[in-house]
Length: 329
Image 1 (cartoon, rainbow, N blue to C red):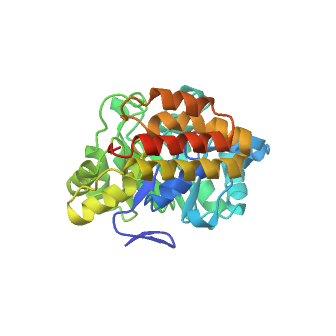
Image 2: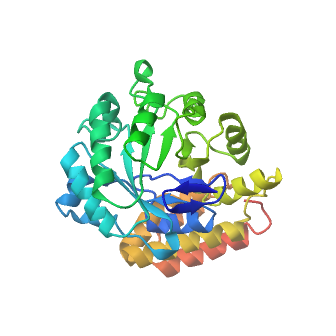
Image 3: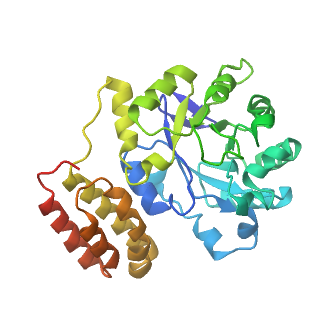
């Protein structure tokens, strides 16, 4: 069993990475059903929260079936992060997570996300203030370092643990790498094998198959893995990994009827949470991912994207099931 403060998770838990414009409540719903053990909201701007920005406050929406769930915050100002942590805690999540890993320019240029990798003392101060601001467990997601000359995650992990974080997720790239090249888990393994470390260490980066998840579990000794891009269009990946880790056997991919059932679940929740118009509109970007690799699917995808009502979408999806009934997804 893996413990994050007072939260108990199964051995080798699988975490859904917080992903901007992806891991909203409808997406989290299908990932939870697909086997995710711990999930996070999309990252929320501390400045947006303390200024009561509607978009930031909407991201605080969490639901009982999602538990355990964490709210992830990012920001470049220590005091704003402390205030935001208090606001986030009032939404009653199970934990607060701090993002020190987002590499995108719009975030890093404001001194937030991965930018803190250039100022470790400030990162430590900020984390300490967030820990003091809430009784909830505080966790951190970060990267190996800013660039190859500052791959100091072993030292950073110790310092963050010393001021009270309860778990650490590490992406196996530097900020300069963004998402290019291959993730290097070597230093993640060194953090885990450090005898000073006693909090759970979760690895993140390039886990795109059950086989790789098990290989990295055994090679680097991590307590669990965080999965991001591999879950997009395949929220069942968590159950696939669990089955393979337990049995050594690969599950067959879902057939078309099952795939469509999950798409409908995602769509229904999207409409309930966002309303008909926005729920249908924002679901459009997911169809390509759900049906990637399906032969001759382009005409159906075009119709799904152009459909304007829930009924239309469901009728097209039913047609998809009929046409592809005998073809493995």
